[in-house]
Amino acid sequence: MSNLFGHDDNRKIFVMKKMFLFLLCLSSVVTLALDCDKETLKTLPGKWLPQPGDQVESGTPKPSPADAAGAKQTLNKIGQMFREQYKPVGVDVYNYLTHNITRDAYANSYIYTISNFRFLCINGKRTKNSEAVSSAVYINHVRISGQIQFLDMPLYNEWGELSSEANNGFGFYALSTGECKGGKLPDFSNGYHTVESGKNYYVWVTCEGKLPYSYVSRKQFLEKQLALLEARRKERKPGDSKDFLSMFFEKPLEAYRQDLKKEQAWLHEKAVVKEEAIKDPVTKAFLYSRFVFTSPDDPAMSVPIMSNPDYYNRSLPKWAAQFIIINVGRTDDFIGQNIRKVVDNNIDFFKTLLGSK
Image (cartoon, rainbow, N blue to C red; front, side, top):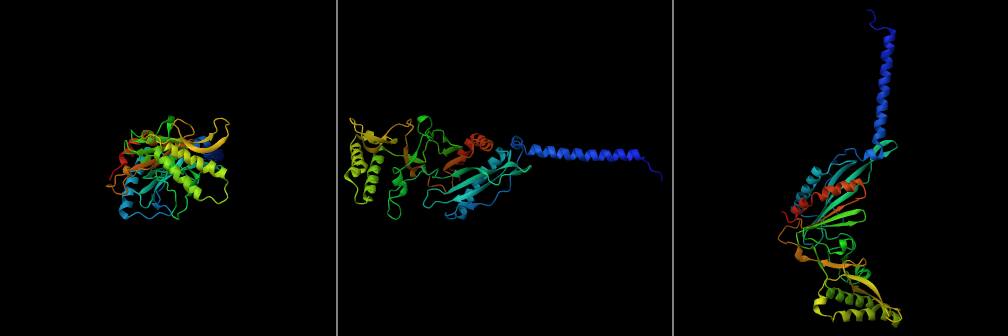
């Protein structure tokens, strides 16, 4: 049989094949380069990764099977909302549940975490960060930070010693200017309050018109200062000079005792405090230091708070959501910004979780 193609035709086909392979390789290189472009990576669709198993935070007891099932029911609702509303872009993402049981608490605490693994370009190849940018939904959590806890602060620890928290502070956890936007105390009349702190964004979701904490009255604050100073004085070693004892104990103690003699209406107002150096009115010499009362618009103020047991509905099962804190991390970046949009658009959804059985 004679050859259907001449030598020239075979050469043309060979050249065309090589050209096609070259263009295919070039296209792959261009695609890889685009994938590794920092700005392009932010726009690439991501995916939801398989959800790991539930966790129990180290040092806390396991929930009962009924409480674990109830918590899972609430967290599944939150997870479903995020899967429907949050479309991962520039990241792969998964979510998980952590139980955090506090003994003797009015309600069990648990945490829904959504972890975003950002796309990166390393050595010319697209990969993703092994460390996640995470945001979380805390259910019935009373510890927001070291300074903000919806708990009472006892003077003495379990060993009968003056507690380090009370000794290093003024005997109460407290709100600061960050939680008191515009110089006003938090307003929960709509059932939620937002806080921006550094690179984090918080939403506190509460039963409408109710506070998960109590404010401290001036009388309560003054009485705590007397008890705290007396406790500190008992721990002093012998040998302190009379001037030292007068400056750091006797004078502030007497000032607080005098305040406690004021009229009841004044004493029962909410305490908003700051530390102030008291000076001699004539010589301006330093006499002693004490906490004085001020207003929420004072940039140096603190608002002492304590627990509010009456907030919780004790007829509900311990897993029922009664207070929610949403913490959106890294709002200075597109990941946190995208999560924040979902949270802000679904405040009403989170409110529907409160008190649900």
